[in-house]
Amino acid sequence: MSQPEYVFTSVEDQCEVERLRAIERECDPASRRRLGATGLTTGWRCLEVGPGAGSLMRWMADKVGPSGQVCAVDLSTKFLPAQRPPHVEVRQADIRTVPLPEASFDLVHARYVLIHLPDYEVALSKMLAALKPGGWLVLEEPDFSASRGVAGDAEQLASIGRINQAIQFMYETRGMDYALGLKLLPLVQARGLNDLAMEYEAPWSEGGSGTARMMAMSAVQLHDKYLATGLVTEADVERYCRFAEDPRSRAVYYATVAVMGRKKAE
Image 1 (cartoon, rainbow, N blue to C red):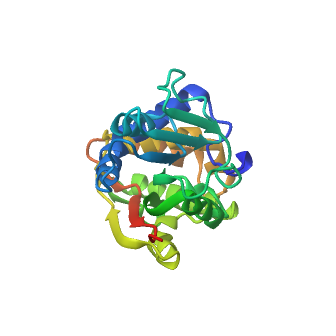
Image 2 (image 1 turned 45 degrees about the vertical axis):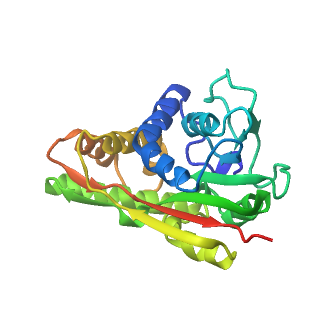
Image 3 (image 1 turned 135 degrees about the vertical axis):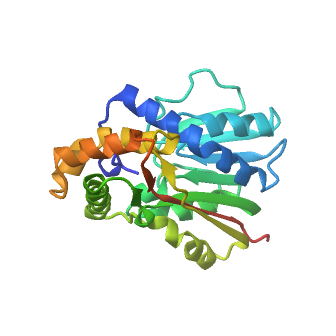
């Protein structure tokens, strides 16, 4: 993931760490459940791609204990805790190019990473190469094509629709797929993984909920990029943020697609 590609490059640091922590609050319970379903246990070696603010990195480190290892790779590591146990390694690098030992990890996980890469298959190949035979791959990616306003006044719902169009345009003009989550299963099927499982979650979120506020944070930080699409106005962004706080509003902001599978044992 080169810096110009990532849509949240050049956002203000304090706002970004707050957004990352909001994602953790909303998404970690489901991620922990999926990771735990692999049998994650003491002594495992884990690769966390795109650790963000580090909550899952820390959780996995607790699970594997000192006899295991967690390696976290991200373009920017500035939001990760400075104090880390000795069995946690942090590498500031691009997953597509970072040198990693082959067939060395019991578990490889990435959440909301591949969507930011036009050449996401390069990253996927790198992750699979690092996975041991019989090891688990867990991927979680969004599907923004599921986005829609459900309840709100006509002006609000029209603005929500235009913001969703801007999100699609913003990703597509960068060569990225805003509905990448829908491709995860065929992608890993083509790589020959076993014991495949898929989950698709597209919950309705009410105004004032954690998801709604998280998406409003994103809208504030991506304000200029949204306006640059020519599809939305300042008023649309303002309505979108007010909608996210209105307890009467309901929306599907995105779906999360999760795919889990095991690399073929030799």
